[in-house]
Image (cartoon, rainbow, N blue to C red; front, side, top):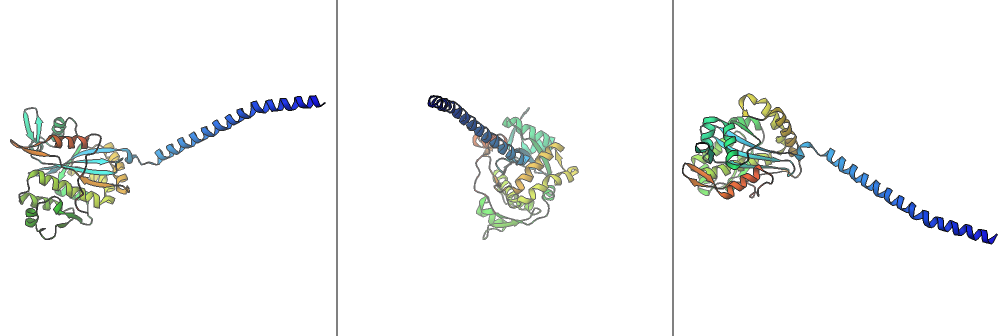
Length: 297
């Protein structure tokens, strides 16, 4: 009797020694699988919750129509939550089939599509699209709103500021309609083309920075004014652009700034320096170039 009881307990012990590790392994791997599934579900939920515009980047050539057209490159970067401007002097030289021409001359003779193409040929990478309008047309796209506060000392020399009436107080208040006249006055004051381009980029960046909530309305404004614009943006392009601008209009980490592409005098205009070329390549390609301190606002 005692012998049979001893054999029973020995068998039970051996069984437990075999079964318990197996049960522990099952529980362990089930827990790991549950954790993995929960992590995958959380990642999927995050992806689904992230707005489409938060993953998109757009690079646009903006052309201000006129007898002396003006140009800006705009990078809208959803992942970086950034709008970055770089204005280009109209006298900037481009490579052309017959030699060289300037950005302004190309635009005046063949329009914005040709200007965007030659810019792309010169740099080896082209903007995604172009948009051209008069200065008043761009002001209408922005619409009515409070004036921006812009520190002219960031981009204008003291003599130019004094001639424009900002000698004592460098802070300017500009609504959208007043910005073109401010830049024209700076040109008449003798501001050289590269410095004027930098001032233009700084002004536009200030509008985007101080008018962040207004960004979401820009695509609809472009659609409404399509008859008065020149652009190769398709309906699908505008839809994607709207997603990004809507995202940026409410992004807590949003920044709007400008960079300057270095140029130097050359026969018939201004040519990009090696650093200036690198700046434009970074803006049009993957990474965004380093920005200076913000101007105004």
